[in-house]
Length: 77
Image 1 (cartoon, rainbow, N blue to C red):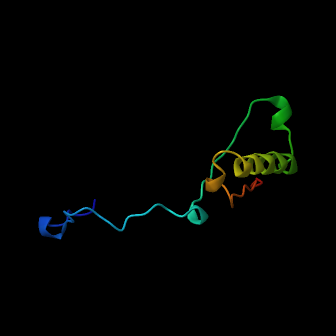
Image 2: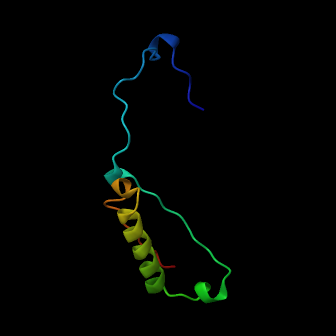
Image 3: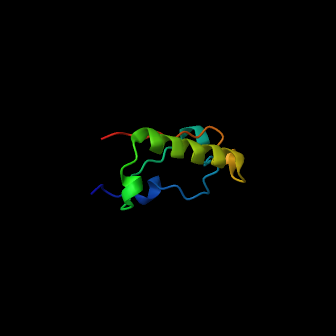
């Protein structure tokens, strides 16, 4: 556990230089699993094709400004 900073070191005024994380620096990773027997046997190439399609739809949809440089990569095990 980190020690607490003394009260005089704490910022008490509103922070004016806080901005959002630029889209080019946001990374999300995760794992998808399925019990569907057909999908469970898909190759990594098939999954990559599905993810590429999802990325294209995100880049063209109503949230396109948030996904203009999105990529999705299938990691093999």
